[in-house]
Image 1 (cartoon, one colour):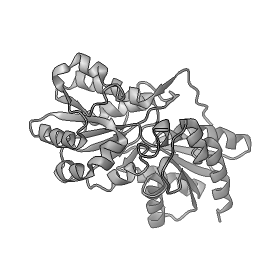
Image 2 (spheres, helix red, strand yellow):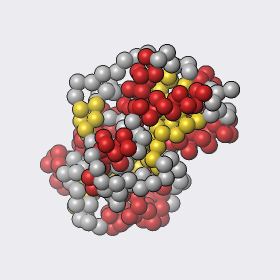
Image 3 (cartoon, one colour):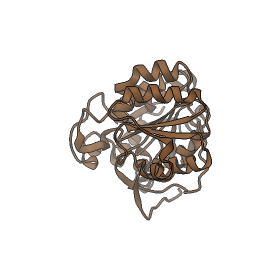
Length: 318
């Protein structure tokens, strides 16, 4: 089993800020819009370098989506920035009608997703956004796992033609992926090979899955860990190849268990290769105010929960 380590911790939203600046340097069609959250979205460096390519919309998220859609008609590649709750729930109609239905080349960039928004509480901790966005025809949905991967994903979506939802977060987490990685939209990353159980994770849960894999290895259980950074389009080939070997699967996500990564995997296996599955996700509830690490533990989104799920699903194998 490959061992992963880290020398620093950074938030994934800073990876977005760094990637946005680099994408803009490479492509002068890249522009940015923000709904009064410049600091939270780490857009300061972009604005300093390209002030004429930035639009401060203010607290008018629906208007921001309409403006972004219009900007694509002139050839611009707009990146919108606000919290995940305001990037989806507040503006779903505008995204559906003006962006997705029209196939507009808008990059919807959503920070502070999931429980790890922390003390801001349930009203801001959206746990349904992946489901909402992946149901839109033609919408690409990406949820990277650390600073480096978020940076790479941000640059990659600038080169992709079509609407994209990019999800990232606020907490400072280990940086463990390659800074020079080749981010491929729709292609899963095999983190570790194993033979006893497949663990499929996305976002912040990838690092928790790596830690769980080490715990399981200490008990003689070999876990194959896959990072699904692109929820849609879904890498069916990688998942089916893995479960053909392990014959059971655990999915891990910082999202409601309904409509997210787990359901994508469930739809795949029920149609192709039926094996037992366990979910590590929020069990159809809203969040609450608290420290991110405490919330992740309370709602069962940590390495120990993944270990327990892996043991349970292995026991269900026939």
